Image 1 (cartoon, rainbow, N blue to C red):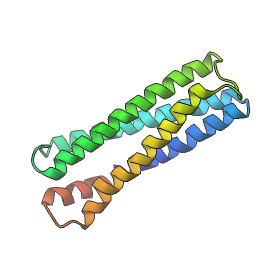
Image 2: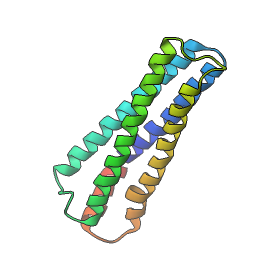
Image 3: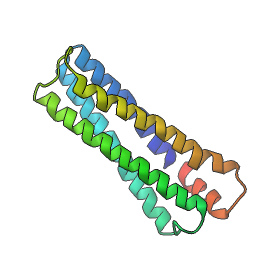
Image 4: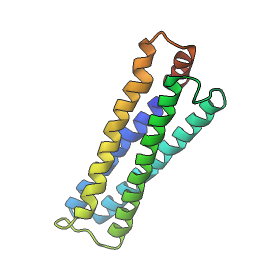
Amino acid sequence: LALVNTLLLVASSLTVHVAHHGLLKDKRQTFLAWLAVTIGLGAIFLGVTVFEWQLLLGKYDPTQNLYLSAFFAITGLHGLHVIVGLVMLAVALVRGWRGHFTPKLHNGLEVPVVYWHLVDVVWLFVLLLLYVVPIFYQGPEVVLDINRWLIH
């Protein structure tokens, strides 16, 4: 699941870049279509995250150990940032659909695009911290079990 989420966010970084570039080249339909795809990918990311949480909460208690507490806190906080980014992108999509952006006047799009890229980069650190590094950790069985579920 972590790999799926990583692919979703990397793809969404590419699609938001294509959307932004489309606006800069005055290709309104390209801009709107790819921004909508970006929002869709972000929503799927959230769905996969919720599914992952349901799997884990069915088997583990978040207060069981430090790893689980950190896992749920960090992925939950990242999920909140994804939601904020999706709201920002949705507002930009509506504004774009209403014709509020031009190739020269698009500051209202710049902030959501940069924020979305930031959320994507932060995910790479979350991935390393919670999914990759623990593979090499020989601690509680739960860490190894979670990584078997989430990476493979």
